[in-house]
Image 1 (cartoon, one colour):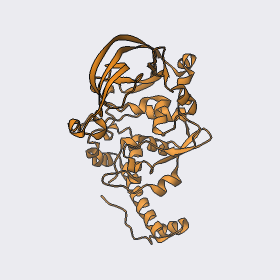
Image 2 (image 1 turned 120 degrees about the vertical axis):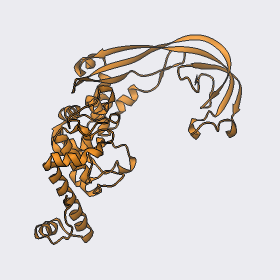
Image 3 (image 1 turned 90 degrees about the vertical axis):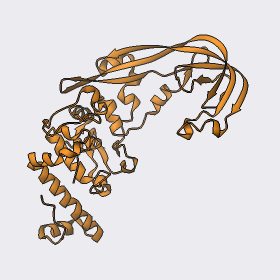
Image 4 (image 1 turned 45 degrees about the vertical axis):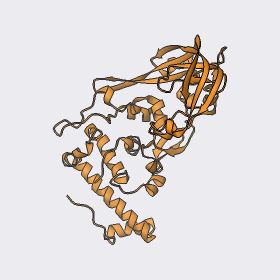
Length: 348
């Protein structure tokens, strides 16, 4: 059976709304509801939504969230802007960054707000000699961070002794990369970061102070083809998008040539169609914890969704058969009309 997947919401949105601008695309995503944390009951309405703190906020971050869904690369200008800088003490200054703040009013997601955090400087504290471990090899001038308390840190001023830790001294850590590798007898000067923050109601207001942090400045929206974000790396190449001019489309040729029909532990073409049907009917209950258990009732309550599902299965299997037989599209259409392909569609 085909299922509705949170990860397919962006692709299904383009399936339902081909040729949208990026602003329209972001707004359509902002109108959806999905949760990885809340579970709904069979008698709950299809349009039920979770509390704001339980919803998946990736879909409600405007153009910044859209850039993540489209897997856009970072611009070279932003990489330069965000490159590491140091203050007068030789300590790192983190680049300013923008945090997108989704806002929900009842069952409606409003346009997000934007909060900029700026690391303005570092305040030196006391110097002391310590005996501590480090994940990384240190040298004078580096920043040491406590292996458990990330906000406890200091500038390395002098190293008396360096010891590379044997494996048996770090094997209580689960992952190899999470083990401290060195122990130091050293002098560090502790410091605290000094930061400022400011909130902006719109991108236009953000642009007045921080044009470097606008979506176009950070993300390469000039890209004309790409893949959607999917949490399972093995499936990330299947669903693709394309852009003509300033309008976005599902890249049907690439997607339909690559995507499987459906898989018990994966996602495929039939799932895309079911997800698209769920979006059309605002059936947010399907996009929840154990949302699959509601699928039979969804198909029963919305016959058009079940018809779309049946057609998707039929289309997928006949197309797969035709591809295996080396048939042309014309031969496939003739065979389908004449029922030459013996792959019966599913029945209730």
